[in-house]
Image (cartoon, rainbow, N blue to C red):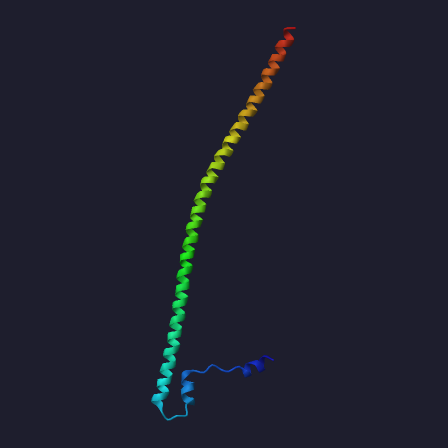
Length: 120
């Protein structure tokens, strides 16, 4: 089946092949047609190139905008993260202080209990 598809598909012809098929005895006319065709193809390629270049420029600008936005978000995140770390450190310090206070309270309550028993 693949071989039948290849047989029916037309082969792309070069300009020289097309010129050799010309039955006219006017080589100048054939050359002029070829030059016009090449010029038309070149203009189409140029327009396609310009379109691709514009799209590329637009994408570069979009990437730059996204990079700036990412940098701003990273800066905001770093500030938030530093604040969160400071709060966590403060929390840990206060938890440690509370544990020390509870130990001291327990010691004082034990001492007071001992004194009250001795005084009875």
